[in-house]
Image (cartoon, rainbow, N blue to C red):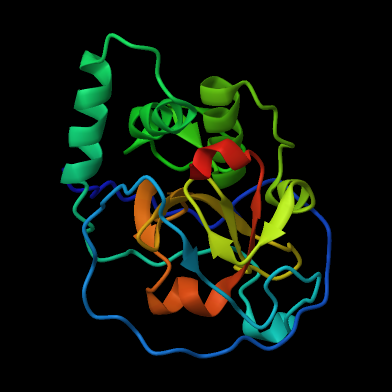
Length: 220
């Protein structure tokens, strides 16, 4: 299954009115191929940036006033859906990891809507909030900025970690998603709705600012 749902909006990712100062972004080389989703039980990948884990901000002149995430090359989600189908047939109790996968697949292709909180339309921080609430019973704050301040900052990412990006002027961080493993993350994109993207893509690599871990059991 390939996520091809495009929703173009001129608003930001999550409700916030805070104005911050930013540091200049670091440029990286673009990756040409899109990976296939694979879920390993002990995935641990290191992702760092000049601002990872720090409350350091970029020059607002280098960021747009409204978030406009890129349309990613299609990423194959076949393995993701296979995992979901397998989960539906299980008779035993789901693990925390499986519960999160179940909820993420449930939201795939949901259109993006600034301030939205349902399957009719959702923004990035509501997506992460809903997945955590419905799968694990964990109540996250509403905005990406608030979510960034909780949990434990990490540089070696594991499944379920929240990943953050500096995507728009005056809001830090402007975007949040859920790490899946193999450098991939699920998120509500302003250009595509709920989809899967790669941290190795130039845009996300350049704008990645850090990650935090809310539930350590998900990485096991």
